[in-house]
Image 1: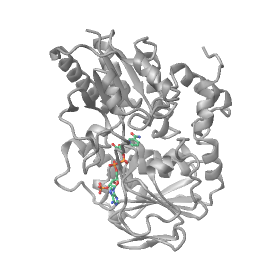
Image 2 (image 1 turned 90 degrees about the horizontal axis):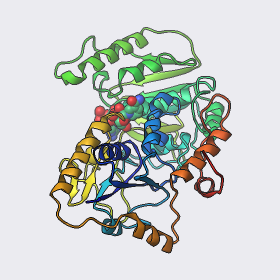
Image 3 (image 1 turned 180 degrees about the horizontal axis):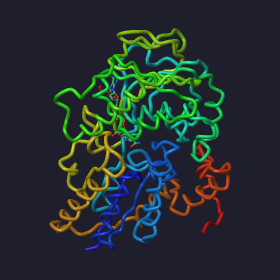
Length: 427
Ligand code: NAP
């Protein structure tokens, strides 16, 4: 029986799932929908612009889209433009690969003041997400505080901390590079509510902070235990030990650099201060003189329209990836916002296996797939961006790249759609 599958979201978890399905059943017809006219989700908008090696996974996805049985259907918001219920009429299985797009709230006074941003918005700004490129964050004071000590927080201090030369080979958007170059930064703060042994950043990312040209990490030796406390998960002990060693090295440094990166542990944020904008950050143990506060404290899955609602943990309730008959979930929407890109590969394969096992037991006739759906989209005046449309965007971005950089992203919805739907031919 020829089955049709819709995957909602073209980030790593969705595309790893498509890959696992097609490896086992190359004849399956799979449509990957995305609200954006561009594929790759977190790889394009989450991964730091100076971590181009991490973005290289897109080459594998490029090859995947070489299959004529896999379609990209961008610029269509399932749940909003296209109700899930209608999609279910046409596809035998639907996989929610929605990621986690909403910033978790801090829940402290002052968090709505101008100058306080969530990591989704701030990262989206420098990575050219069409919803956030216009954020224009306040970066006009010498101090910037970043709340959270995970890898996203590390990205958020490293990117503005780097010099233009250090960012030359990155794909940071021109508007963000310009704003960062003009910012009078002297003090960055990385704020952990618990101790260094509980910080969730990983050693390679932490070590990078020690190699920046104009930034010196500043760590108070008194905050650092000499050894890991008892009870650390053995699976994490090696990374934590390395982290501790790096933090001890940072504490011993006294080199002079224009920007200090202060690691503050055991510092619980109590209030963002200011009347009409951020003027400071009150921690339980001190007050920081900062004009910008960015919280990097994790994400929640956000859904629109008739997509299933996330639970109180921000994930879509599921049993090993199955939400309901014919409906599955993968990635951060399934398990919460943790893990690196490769974490999703094995997990997406498990969900793919489950879908195929369910197909094997299913006696219902297969559904019609995309032909009827395409007609419905056209009736609604909706214009999907297909793989060639994305390739036109990509070609325009490569053409606009400054020297040394892989691309200059198109950042607003109109420019993206215009490039995608132009008649330009691309190879
Ligand atoms: P994360 O690792 O879960 O870190 C979240 C941080 O926020 C933790 O330090 C947490 O502290 C803190 N936090 C949570 N609620 C808080 C609150 N109310 N007040 C103060 N602090 C609070 O999440 P993430 O940094 O967003 O990263 C998400 C995933 O992406 C992770 O698996 C990460 O490794 C991965 N990632 C990887 C890379 C890379 O490999 N280069 C880059 C970026 C992201 P507690 O521990 O005390 O809760």
